[in-house]
Image (cartoon, rainbow, N blue to C red):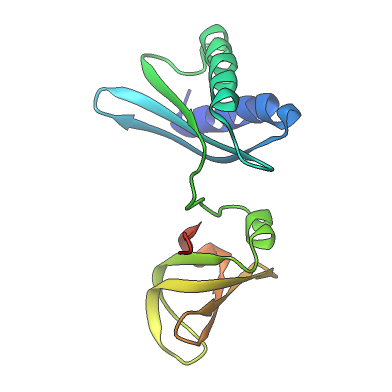
Length: 159
């Protein structure tokens, strides 16, 4: 099975396990590290994810992966919370976390409303509309960034 097919199948299986438990798949990493493949699953739910939540999903996912043989060869499975600097990936993430401090990195230089070009934008997320993310920057400018230009976006810890 190709790496993309494996990632798609993993996503399906994880969502089948997590969704009925009120959990959401935040991110999935499936990649080679050293000689083995690593499957990293990041889950979240209202009120936060617990160690017991992670352990339960890990056991069930491991059993399914062993039976269905989705991944050939040896792999390491890690199931955890996305942490306080949660990645923002889906349109729903950008809607849900409006008003929160975020860091957005773009693939290429992008200009804010004052014409200042940069790749990293730190500020308050104003939401997403028509596929464009709004960020009120710490320096006072505003940035409107098309979602397809975003290389990485995550919540930032506020002190």
